[in-house]
Image 1: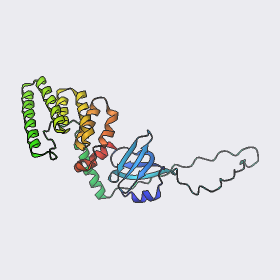
Image 2 (image 1 turned 90 degrees about the vertical axis):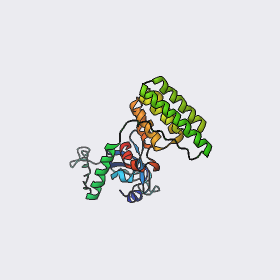
Image 3 (image 1 turned 45 degrees about the horizontal axis):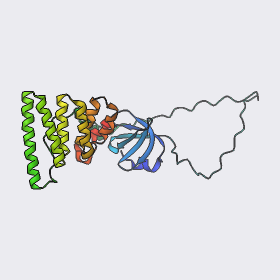
Image 4 (image 1 turned 120 degrees about the horizontal axis):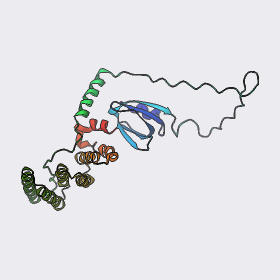
Length: 265
């Protein structure tokens, strides 16, 4: 949806109702708007960022705080009290105004195709902590440190795979400790994310969530925030999960931008 016409006609502070392609309509106060997204403060006081492709329609339900005409105009004089036709007392109150008619605008075929593809993408997002992946960013290290990091990671990976094969939780915890050491020694918070996924599969979910939080605070990328959001959702911190999920919407995760926007709206 193009937001430029709304930006020029709806002042900030207006009460609006936003209909999105996926999810329930959102009512609240317009906080900010540009050509790519708008920010609305909902009835609970939370600020929600909606990107233009996720928005189907915006309805202005009341004037903005800074709209409504010339602030220097004199207030209107009070009207005399109305009476009924025979002068026997005040006139009855006027009938309530009819509710505004919401006009249904069908989507064009191209938009329906895009919406169907988005729905499929949203349903394909697995709301679970992903499996262990042995990938650590090392491009900022010199050749010697990069070689040592890869050597230590291979050692921990071999130890972990043997521990899983023999079903030895103590050895898995040793791997977690080894990855903590790697994270500190090489300044590689990705290793904390790997350790968190190990603990998650070991059933120590609160400890895993804490490691995901430490990793996300440093990395602040889509993958680490997604791990944290899923851990919050499944360990009794469900109220924090939507805000964390919105942190996933980053430029480095283009294939997930639209479905995650829909999930977090």
